[in-house]
Length: 254
Image 1 (cartoon, one colour):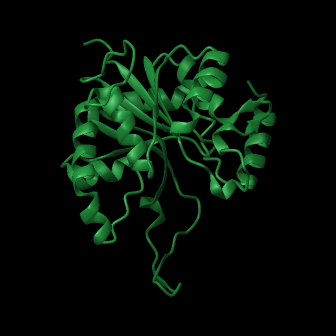
Image 2 (tube, helix red, strand yellow; image 1 turned 90 degrees about the horizontal axis):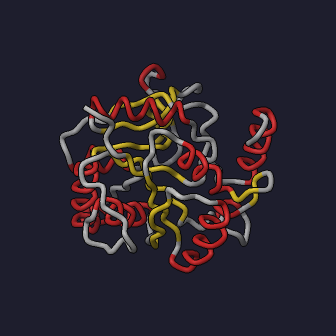
């Protein structure tokens, strides 16, 4: 059997309040290029990814099309769609465009109904081809996988007053990253369930923090953890930006 079609959903809709900047973090310069450039460049150059849906805030769509996609020649970006209030809203909008769940994805984009969906944070600039290949191999076998790395530090579970109540075995504790990769029908159906039940989850105080949790909550499919990389950081604060600059300098940049 040949390679299945792989569509990346790259998320760039957040405002990045922890970055302490008036500019959304995905557009902040990292060694002369906007932060979002790096994830899109990895997608553009990848032999794994066939096309891409870019999710950004509604007010930034024109800017992103002109100053990011067109200016830098990201030909795999098939559609730029508006995000939502929460991360899961943005992912759902991207899935509707990617998988044909009802939202008009624009132009001539053909929905990916039977392949794989790679959900990637635009604020993770160091996505590599090796990570993408490992995720592709895992999703072929297991239908759902996420990149991550075993934690280096001891983790404590605390109560509402900040006192330690449990210490998980570090051998079974991973730090989750992106991409998070799924069969297209699986992740679309899981998100449709989430959108139907998000009011109940909110009332019960259940917070959905990543895509794997959506699959874990609303399907019977187990999610495989796949080796990402300790350098596959998410840029959230000014300190993270400094780390990213150092990483780029050490690696020789692009």
